[in-house]
Length: 168
Image 1 (cartoon, rainbow, N blue to C red):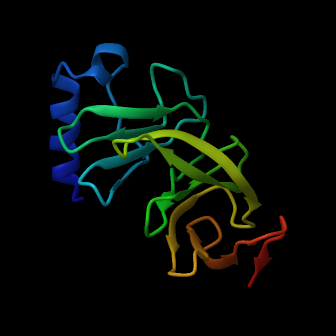
Image 2: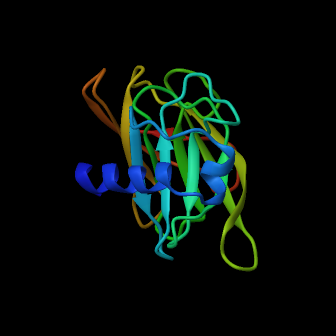
């Protein structure tokens, strides 16, 4: 989503009376990243060194711009996050609040397909410094991460049975 579109989206949310803004404060866009899902909704992740209930760092909006899910977590500088191809997993920079780490979660949905829970699956020490800014998943659910602190690209193959991660 281009910056003008994101700003328009945020202005619409901040000026609306939907269920998110009836409860939560306005969304900032420092370190904010968005990703459309396969149902027309939007996931938004914003950098929060100390997240609070009124300032959640991860929010899901359906295609009617109604907030259906939010998560309070201390993600780190860069605010990087990315879902895999079928939106069953997400990786978030510093999901535990630790600099230089990324956390992989599985996503559980309700009967209508809206997210209801993130379950921690893995925590990875990325070796990329503080500013992991973007991720990508390949078809085999391998993860690629980039950082402007270290100016590196790394690849991780997630385990399928044992809790071991291979780095190349």
